[in-house]
Length: 402
Image (cartoon, rainbow, N blue to C red; front, side):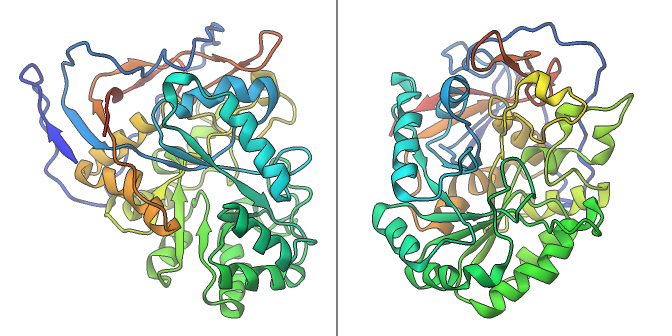
């Protein structure tokens, strides 16, 4: 990592290393979007123009949790990720879900066809959807085909999860095969019991589901996806080396107040849902302290604007165009910019057993306005990004080849 200050810039980086320092939440405004929907390069395109702010050069990052949908919608959003990331772990919760190797390879081909030629560095990492019917043979086939992980969705936990696991006992043979073959289990860590409060579902999952899984299959490599609570941060921090977590920008920067400030905020609604400030602080502290088993996973999840702003709105925050700048904000406010590179670029591939990227990207501290919306799919569809109509304090300035 290289951090340097432009001669033009007068910014002074904070000296504090306090890990639980409160992070500033997004400013929320009630004005209606103006339906601008620019291309992928409109918010943070690489450029040769001289920057005026502090610059930070890091190894090209990867996104270890990403939704890109399919069809025309997929073709709209893939370029946002491919521009800046080397790889992305693609979630399999399509309709129908991606449950076997052939489906995964076909989906990968469709994604690759959506990658612009100038972003040829990008490669999707495919996953399979774990169901009650997943067998040990399915696991071995995935391993042979280069599919490194299965995703566990408790049935009904989130978008397109109705085919998820209903009874962990039914997938125990598959989990044991995963442990023996080095295939990872990626977990949406929430119970779906209607008697459990929505804000407690992650903590209950750890106690009632995840700990028993690890007791039965102690060598299984597990990623708790998009953690949101102090319980999850503490659990991963103290767990054995085969347990890690991905973390989103929203769960570092926002607490549950962001859902309700000056009205209902559907574009801040995601699952797992945003939690109290004490949980946001704990997750941010775990990430910015430099722990090696926390890594970048945006969980960027695009939905049509109308599907979010509905009587029964969809869960998911579309952060792909702005996530890197938001992560940089969070690490800067924690006085830990020097630890961003490990979180974004090293910890993920190290845990997955993959090589680190070798090229670099440079971010610059220059405020840039986030568009109100981006084009999404067909028929003039749009998707509203995280922090729409406001500013992100960092942007990608350039890419340095190997």
